[in-house]
Length: 168
Image (cartoon, rainbow, N blue to C red; front, top):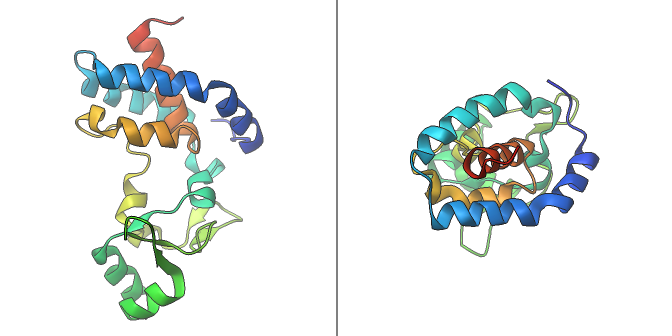
């Protein structure tokens, strides 16, 4: 597995994101048969190629949504009340969801690209980037956003494009 060069990744995204979003839109409009099984197969292929610890771009530029359960679990781990945790680290976004006040994430260890609270991280983080969710078609809008930030999502959409539209 190669290390991910984020500068090169951003250039590649700018060049191809319109095409890849169009691919996702086509799949969303007319899902191929066995899309969920195909997504599972592609998911396995992607993780042989992409190492999140060589990137951590999601933690650098995005923020998870914190559920009430996440807030209780993490604040308890940190020896804070949920209110103290929210006051220190979180803000409500336009959807009234709790998200990080700052980017990069306060729990990212920049030396290792590892999460300092990995075992108790937010549910949103533990599921990211949501590649092989059942009913993949319901996650197309998420993938359209994530191709810009996540090399694994980007690779998944490229593989999906080849599989569905037989691009060599």
